[in-house]
Image (cartoon, rainbow, N blue to C red; front, side, top):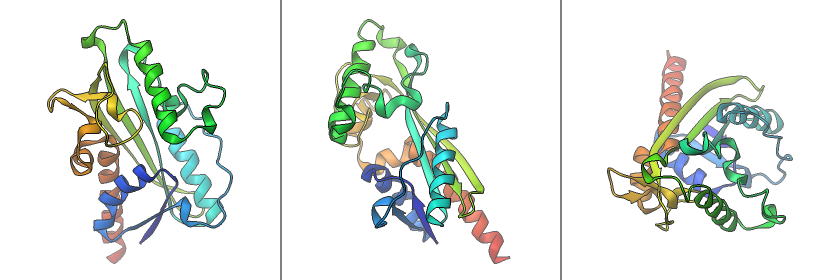
Length: 213
């Protein structure tokens, strides 16, 4: 079975492939298409809504079964922000934000987050990564949805070289490290995207089993 993962983010592709490829599911990205449709407007108020928008749009535009992800960081002391705006959190402060490299955008988002939390007590910096996945067929029918979370606390200093986005800031108290200090294997075993992908994998496994009967 072949699935399009509607993203060009290599980190997301690697994480989802690690879960689905062992199930004999080939995961391809938008980068493998010569012509890619213009990105849809992600104006949903929840991760689930935006994942649904992307999955349906790309499935219909490219005529294939598509899985889409929307993910981000929720910080309790900020009322759940940056939430669905995680990837563009600092865009209101930098005129050329969308012209920056992905790593520079991540750094700008991290700096803004730390500045907003500078006076918040450490015990109140609880946060979580959230990932919503949506699977749609070529006609735009939603086949399955899943959601995963990854709990932690925002640290004061970015630490670690693995991962991307806010990984260097999410501290895992039980492991005394940040998400960016985990190996890819350890991160997949407990991350928001890993949890959501395993739920989706179980749906695909059950569907394949039902088809055989």
